[in-house]
Image (cartoon, rainbow, N blue to C red; front, side):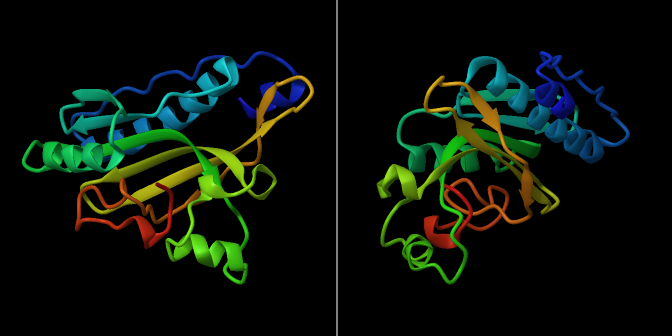
Length: 188
């Protein structure tokens, strides 16, 4: 898909993987990777992406939910749904404001301490990214971050070089574990 974007060709929709009942966790991780590629494809096609969560059971049954309303309440509801439901994995897709300033950057420190939010920054001091995070009941997590670039003149969007985070923080972090706090890092 990356080659198609660079060459100007229209990328094709990623093929959906099959679910292996003998390897539900492996199947979930394959679906997580697939949904990351599908999110990239949808973003390039539409120029934006709705915030949504996919919940998977070991049977491969899934539930898709649009994230709406009060986000703290939504996070609490998701954690309630997960408890005792047989959900083995969650995929969360969203667009979010970003700040990549490093740990020695004063503004980044203020964000990490919860003194200011990234959305409070001036446009020239923040960026955007497409986030696709997966969390599984076995404690594994991955978050793919695809920086978003918008051409000011044409309005065309593109995605920068993706990178991954292995720890997911914020209100939607640690969905299978202890309650998370917004100031843990990651994204909110």
